[in-house]
Length: 312
Ligand code: APR
Image (tube, rainbow, N blue to C red; front, side):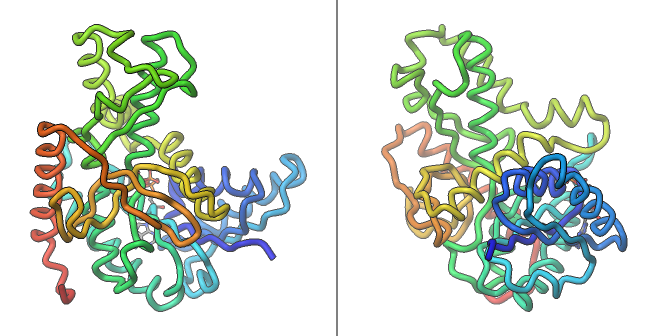
């Protein structure tokens, strides 16, 4: 029997996540959206591509959360995307309410699942989801670093004229503009990137990477990115389904690592069948460590603003 995965939110990110999963025959999927008909319609449309694309994974759509029963992974993409001019506080409040209502159902119908949060602001939403769930922290985390690193590698590859596959990068901290790309771990085929780029050029690329998501929002006028976010999410799903112990950056719950406690923030982890099987504590210079702690402090402040009413 195939694995079953639930995707909550039948928007751009959710449907693209599913398309990637079913076209690779990775699992059967149930798509859930609060708006009646939207998940059903999109699931039907995607299913009808099966004979052409040659997959036999099943996708069903529903607005009834009880159909997520039996899912080994729940991916949460429900919520509003960032729009130009929207304050961070507004987004935190609105998406905080969405995560709260979704998690009530996840607890009821899929309490054994691994939960991957994609809804922004990522670290805050991942922490909120975990806090509400009562699940062990290794089972509730956010997708952020994989995407930030992909953007970073892409911009580096363009500048260097090297395949993005030969670039290694590590991006820590909050997902988004406050991300922390770590220079000493940025390499081209193992060779430090400083061998190939002037400090000015490197700084330009960092700037572009940090604005990677925001510049797409500005261009689209409404909505935010979904192609690279869905690819990044499925990369994590694959590591879990195959128990491949991949080292990836994820928004993970820290419990003293890096001197940070009780907040989700982007760090390298080992991802396998159990979810986050290890939070890796690597050596950082003082500047990067300070930036990571500051990112955690800001995320913590936003979580505190939410006043979820849960028992922490
Ligand atoms: N339960 C289920 N679905 C919900 C709920 C809810 N409580 N609230 C909203 N939704 C659904 C909406 O009906 C919509 O179909 O979530 C979907 C969101 O889709 P889009 O608006 O297309 O947003 P998308 O681009 O997919 O982004 C979703 O991922 O990358 C992040 O920042 C992004 O937070 C945003 C999320």
